Length: 438
Ligand code: UDX
Image (cartoon, rainbow, N blue to C red):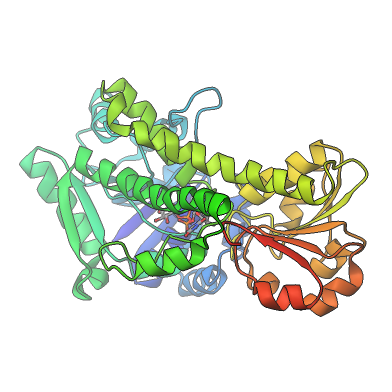
């Protein structure tokens, strides 16, 4: 297949390189010239394990290139929309500006046999409105929705070996057949490997994605709500998670209590889902997601309060070391990061905050000039009155409590991700506190 990806962020760039690696001819399009130049030179614009290797290999094969010139799209037959759908600045709903711009930019260059495929996460109803947008522009190009489920940190793996593929096909049988033909060719190696394929209409495919992310967010907030009760009773949330996770109807994954979920997907997806339900007149159906969001936000503030308590009631003049800035390990993504929220809040209350992150230091330095940035955990913790572990990078999980104790002013550790061994840290002389564990 000859494929373009419109948008070369985490989703589009990984998709472009991965599709080229399985034999397709791919053109990655984006409006950001610097990003396109970097990608053409094999430089990954973000930290994503395995991406550089797949990018380099795909560029070397001659099957992948990147461009800002949308007229290059005329020679390609499948156009995959991979642009972002962030939360609107002043509302809970998704901002579809980039999706509309992607379709409008493609319109003048769509070949007669072209098909448009959407992968971005969009509010239900968007695919139908985009199909209408194409018709109004005089194009009868078939459009299908094909949501992605990739996790940052595993983006290449999730693209090449997805646990399911979903097609949202148009109602018109001829258009649906053409879109399906293209999708089947694109995913031929995955389908041959027996990847489950689920087929529905536009609305179903759009809702599969937001339902999946809402369920994951609910699972995390559920266990964090239980952690709140544990904190009031002396129970241990990690033992509860282990015990309930052994019930295979519940399962052990996404039951890690801590400072909650962040990132470019879960927080904005649940809010956009609620906003869309409101527009559709079914607000009450998703009322529980408001509580999911509330529990999540409370966990962040809980850590701030816990740190202030340990510091004797005030942050003024205190030195606080923050280990982790990205929203999860193996990523440099700081969007909606609980770690960065906590660091900024404590800094705003008068503490001298030093942050360190194995991948996001440059980003923190550029975006949060009020936060000092240190090379590693030992440098960040030098002279600290308290240390907060907020992103569970391997480097932090493996920290030596004896060695770290030597550099701090006061050995107090708040483990926001429940990843350290309480006994080992207490034995090394630390006051150790974690989330929902006695
Ligand atoms: C998510 C979905 O998992 C993915 O399928 C979708 O395509 C995009 O959104 P991602 O944003 O990469 O992927 O992150 P995810 O691994 O889901 O983690 C989200 C947040 O939840 C992180 O901040 C993580 O630290 C937190 N989390 C996750 C918990 O706090 N506890 C858990 O048990 C699991």
